[in-house]
Image (cartoon, rainbow, N blue to C red):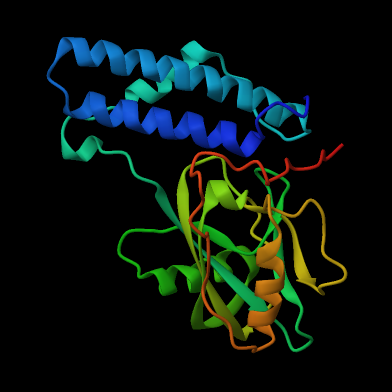
Length: 245
């Protein structure tokens, strides 16, 4: 990759944003002409996605290379007529959990090998705080109490996901349980100090790490969130993840 190539984070975001616009357009349009244009945009988005995925794999991450045609077919399956077809980010919920030594609880995700705080998709029927408690229990065996909202981040900007999502992250304290990993979702887990964090650690930017340790240490914190960008569509200051090899 040359210095003139756009960052991987931009490629992923551009492809997903174009795809969402095209699929939403296909969900609402009744014009054959507009449908053809939206389908063409979807192909362009798939081209970008295929290149981004190729670069992602080249960095040493696990996954499967998909052609433009395969990506288009997968996206087209998700086109639903009307309001139900409007594409929005999914919602995930995470937890910042510390111990008596002010060490941070992290899991190594089985799907990507990346280290991150316990997190998972928001299930219908649960509040966001209830999801945080459930995810920590399921992934680590620890029982926690939710104290405060700590972060609201865009998963793609944050660098923890290739899927468009917003993540609500709560500061939680341990009230019981014993540490053991989920057999399917986690490869490893543990409490880590600021100076001995595991690698590879999720996040294009690591500003969340200092924020997390301030939270579990009991320091007063504001909610961490992605600041508005200008221009919105370029993230040139965000480096790509280092290779796992």
